[in-house]
Length: 272
Image 1 (cartoon, one colour):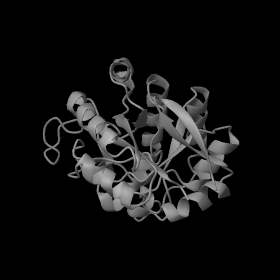
Image 2: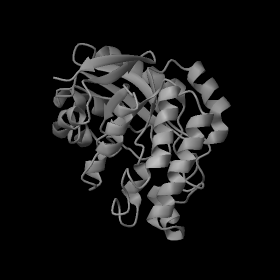
Image 3: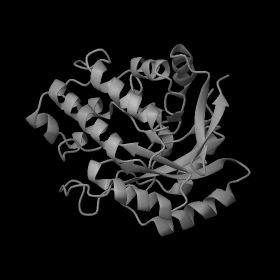
């Protein structure tokens, strides 16, 4: 059993209406021991009428103030860590260096949410490109981002783009994109970063986690060890989503440990 969830969102994210306290209480009810709130901070996210202005950014000062109070309030029931999910773009390396230096985050996820300036969620990408081409472009852009942005701890939901493809994972496999995926994984490992196993692929009907277990297995083969587990929950009901599958997947891929973070330092937890 996995007892930590290191990817969840609250009303500080544009795409969630759940309060931080509601999410913490939900995690306690699910029996989790450690959680990390990782609200979206996507600087330079383009304007879209569906998202409105100033989408996917928040004021870190009230964020830390509220979460610190809740962290102390629930300290006897669950360990609450304060994190962030930054939206990677290759020109933002200097910005995120200052941002993560200024605020005492426990954990930083770096994620690709834009391909050619378009969020796959909004479907414009797939109205212009087919699935195969869009996925290739996403991985190429992810590699550029990972090379140019240093200040994150794990690379989030590597094959996120497949959630929203016209045919989902029908045109996706590790083997098909092996060359670019291996380069991404090697770059992450060389930089001393990790990746996450994001269980929301099951929520989106893909039948697998993000990234696909074949990618997780390859990460381990290449020497990767740092691996956090997250539900990518946006409501309390989604916390710990599909966790009953997580331990089996990890063991099948060769992992003996999963990772938590505190003060940007990895903490390895043995799989039981």
